[in-house]
Image (cartoon, rainbow, N blue to C red; front, top):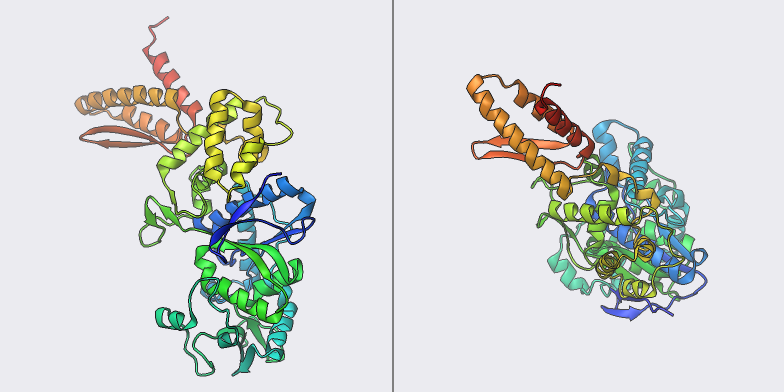
Length: 473
């Protein structure tokens, strides 16, 4: 039997995964706040948890794994977007939720067992808040309800910080109704312009953290196996989840294993709109990068290490996947992935190690096991296929591009003498239509295939050249 080992943020070490109930393995992933497109960082933990979902289903059977990923559809960012655009909140959240579902599907992610929306669990949030007040862990003040951080001695254990250090090193909201600067909001008042629900404390809406505690409790119970998200959520979101859940249900464990993925870089730098390297998933898809290529690049780095998205990596991933799909084009998959592949993946989701082993299978020509084992990562699936027929230039196509570049260079020299640039313009137009950017300078000509590169159109340009060079019949 393969042993699954996961790095538990809670204990800061790798541990053997022992489920609470082998017949009902339960995990929760914090999902998106639905006010805008999902960016690459949002996609990384979805892909990581999708691989874990696939692995657990492989080890324990699909019927014995429950996976919950929520939608936050009540939040001040959503309210701000509605005020900014003049659109109804319900319209914004419905549209953005569908965008997210479409984009995550394009990356090859399976749908979770449950995808709850926060607004459908307001009653459960109110009930949990009432329970915390009854147990002395929360208090009402000025229309708000706040969690009393000092009432929970274990606060800070998950993130490894003391409360006093957090106050000294972090910006916290100071409000006159707070007993302590670190106390966080469970419920806050809403005026007539904002969404709100009736509660024992007046019309209002939930704070950010209580929703995940209420939804995970409702769908997975007071104790479940795995909770995850990006390391940016470790504090305060996950720390606050632990506090309110463990105080509401002190006899339960809440989540026993915590997984956090590292941050994402773009070309070696932190993704930022100010740096011009901020990409949504849809940006890359619209540029022509196949979802499978994006997934491959993400999985090529271990989830606990920073992942650097570069065009060079994407090109290499596309070439690899194109080759693998060609090898497996007429192959019937094996009944199960190779055991040593499952063992490698079970060592704290070592996706990079699995990809290295897939390269070995391809080199050895073991295409049946290549296909089946790749699908454990969500690669080479039927749903992600089709792009390889119209992809970027491979080695042979690069040779064609060099020949066409020389042809364009000769046409350019002739045009500078004759002042007739019609042939140059025609070639540039054909190349652009083929998905090839043309850059001309004093130093020479560069032809750069874009993600939407279509080799068939390149072939047509070459045929026209050969036809025009042929002697008259």
